[in-house]
Length: 338
Image (cartoon, rainbow, N blue to C red; front, side, top):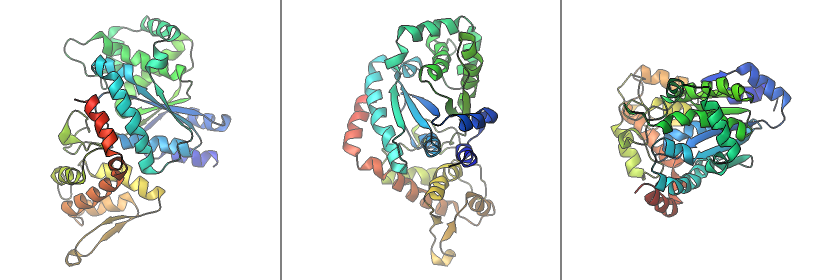
C-alpha cells in the first residue's frame, strides 16, 4: 500500500490531525510506525467504543503497530475505586479484544499494555514530578477538564492525569496517539510539555465522538444514553426504538452511529445498508453511501421507525460475538461493577 492510500485510510472518519505534514513524513520514513490509544478502566465499555476500535483497525491496515493502553492507574485518578482496579482491568482485557474480533480485523500487530506495569517505575515517576514542575494547577485542570470528572473542590489526582498521559507517549515508544475530540486539550498538553522534559512531541489524531441515544455524549454512566456490549437483543431494540429521532431532523444519536460505524463496516466488507420496509410502503431501501441515506432521511423518505428497526438489526449482528462469550464476560462484569 502506497503512502497516499495509507494516509487516506488513516484520515477516514478522523477529525483533526496535528499535524498532517508530520504524519506524511512519518509514513515516508518509518517502515512500521507505532500508534496508541489509552482507555481508562472506568465505566463499562459500550458501542461508542467502536469509533476508536475501527480507527485503530484503519491503522492496522495501514501497516502500523497498534498499542492499547489499559490504563488502570488513570482509572483510579478518575474516581474508579482502588479495590476495583484489577477486576475492571480483567473485564477490559477480555472485552476489548472481542470488539476487534467482531469487526474482523487482523490483530497480529495489536498489543495490549497494562498501565501500572510501567507507570510505577522510578524513571517514569521521576518524569511525572519533573513535568509537574513546569505546569500550574490551572494548566493541568484546563488540560483535563473535558476528560476527568472534576467537582467544585477537585482532587489532586485529576491534575496528575494529563501529565501521565503525555509521558505515556514516550514510555510506550509511539509515534502517534489517537483520542476523541474531547481529548484535544490533553493531546495538545502532551505536544507542549514533552519537549520540556527532553522528549520529542508526537503526532496527535482526534476523532469525532458518537452521541448518545438521548442526544448527548454516549456515556457509560448513563444507561439511557448508550448500548452496553452485553445488552441482549430485546434490550438493544428497545433502547433504539426509544431513542430521540424526529422525522427529517438529522440531529440525532442514530445517524452518526450509522455514518461512522455501520457504513464504514459495510464499505470494508463491500456490503449495502438495507432499510427493510413493507412493499405497501415502497419496499426496501438500499444504500451504498451514508450521504445518500442522510439526504433521504432529511427529505422524509425514510420513516424513523424503519431506520430504528434496521439499525437494531445491525447492532444486534455486531454484538453477536459478545453473546457467544456471554457467560464468561458477564461473570467478570459482575465482579468489576457490583
